Image 1 (cartoon, rainbow over the protein chains, first blue to last red):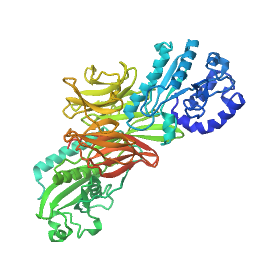
Image 2 (tube, chains in turn brown, green):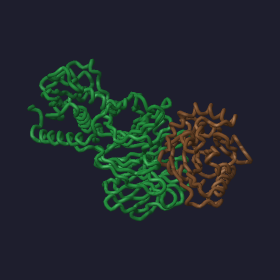
Image 3 (tube, chains in turn brown, cyan):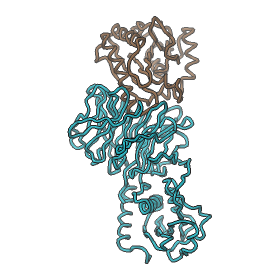
Image 4 (spheres, chains in turn red, brown):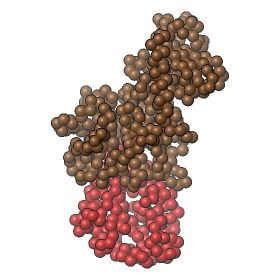
Length: 197
Length: 443
């Protein structure tokens, strides 16, 4: 696991590269070896950043997917089954309102989608990392971020994912995706990152 | 010398010296740490004028200007207005040198005089006399002998404490310490450091450095240990560590969150937030047996335990009514009472040392520090800065230290319970947050 700071620092540089990558569907520099291992650092650096898309954009079949496509994959969760050569990863993120931990209908659909991905890939497990924005009390936010991640876990279990395949981690307000102290940054920071491994 | 209350005073001085040496003996070796700088951004009306006369000394190069330390302490309290040195009519250092007629026109009641003697080998003797200008007599006299140079600041704070208590009736809290977490960018990496410094920001000592977040330091009542939350293992664990780092132990690493440690007033127990049984709830751990007792049992969030000074009840934050509000649980009966009603967000309760006030993080569009008076049920918003959080009382209850954001930078600020912002503490090249004001140190 890398710190979100690293992510943030790399974000600017990566964004340009990724936009190009996605558009051209050419293998990224990190994908030279074609193996998952080579890609790992790149994936990690991008954790939670998505393409920088704001919540509400990138709507696909009524499902919000804030994913990064690296290399030759298709924007379809089933590609996760082809990890060795498939070289594609999603960093889906579920966003929340201030002091909220209830999933919107849209977010429920998003989580359902990844629940299905997990059902289709029984060897995979999922980490649900809960976060809040920086406002209010840090310890309350630690609990709130866990509540959010557990809300996502509940939906996954509802759609059949075994509890044992789900790991919930709360980071509270400690690992912001955006470092500014603005409404826009706060919107991006109130989130649960779904990490399928 | 003849004015010192000789024998008992001297005995006390020796005890004091030993106490200080003990305190410093357990510190980590000093590293080049940037200290917190203090900016006093509001002047006080009704502050009492007082004369702190520069101390005489037998050496030109003293490691510390003790009179200036006292002056700064008293000014920061907001209750005193030390006269500018340039306006003083004379600079006596012995009682017999004071010509009271000279001081009468200054409209002051009290003055401090003193001297520092360099005894060689980095040892100093400090002698002070606090004088009543109107009654033309000494209020107290004190002498400290054989004090190493690095402890001279502490002597200054002790003198400030004595003056403060003499004139206000409340024990001074200048000779105390604060813990806080700094966050710095080092080559694009986040570096967290848990530090302990003097209450005026000097002498910062690193307690723990980590690439992962550190949260919620809580002082042991004896001031020798800190409990805190560390993400060093990838998730929130509660750690207890002595200030010298010789003792360090993971206290709670249960599934889910392990957070909000709060030492009981008797030092025997630790209240904490765990979610191992479902949602976040308050538990109390016996530090001897490690036995856990669940204190709250609710589907909602219960966190941020704060002990009442008598140790018989715990204030906590719960969102059981939809938004965070402060509740109190009586430990003997389990009875729960709601404490805050004002506004939609009252989190992170901190109890004043006398048990009368609860400071909270109050959300009302912005986030500020609010103060609930349990006696009158009055609620006041004390601060008007940005992203205010993590309030912590000075051990004498006279000040509240909290974290805020100013110009995109995390800083600490101190406010008096009557709401007068007095000062801002910041580090040069990073953020500072998660403050916790330590207990009184032994006199």
